[in-house]
Image 1 (cartoon, helix red, strand yellow):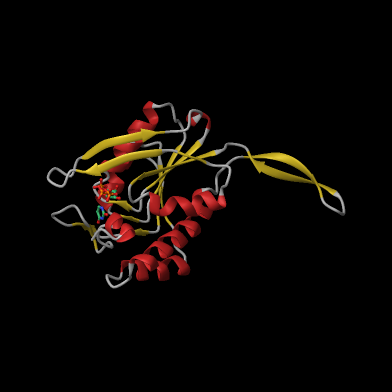
Image 2 (cartoon, rainbow, N blue to C red):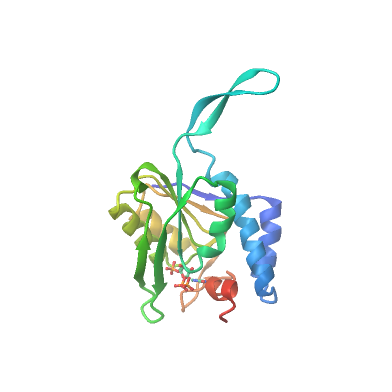
Length: 208
Ligand code: PRP
Ligand code: URA
């Protein structure tokens, strides 16, 4: 079974509370979700392997380290775009792939409309990004596509998750660790996370 990490930090708790608020305007929502993603990155990348690298300071030579396995960030369109910038900023050598999926509003099943990944994906640590993990259908399907194209080291980073989504991804992909900033109570009858924050894509892009 994969590992679930719910990242607990006062700054994240504070910013998630502001993010959830229905009165938070689009610009602030975007800034907050970026800041939360930035804080989460510290934990999500904690196990990246290092290789030794000597460095000469103005004073002496010393043993340093560089990241050995490069990163591929894969935001799930469209809401994943709202958190990819934060990770690109902190891991500038990462490549970015995109998987386009939307949930059919009737069936809640994910429908793929786009997939473009780095060609060396099998050599990279992949971090799949989506602010919301609801039924888990979108994340599980995105991870399927990414695995089909050769990736073998994948982590999933979402901001808010429901227990149903965590279970679905863990069952479908027991090798994929999941990172959340908040684990909420449940899904409602429309597949929305309760309490959640509403529709992440709409709140990010002002399409409410
Ligand atoms: C949202 C969200 C996830 C998905 C989560 O996207 O960004 O991708 O729903 O739901 P699930 O876990 O039940 O699959 P949506 O389908 O609304 O598309 P959008 O990002 O284009 O708004
Ligand atoms: N997608 C969202 O954007 N929000 C939810 O609560 C569930 C799925």
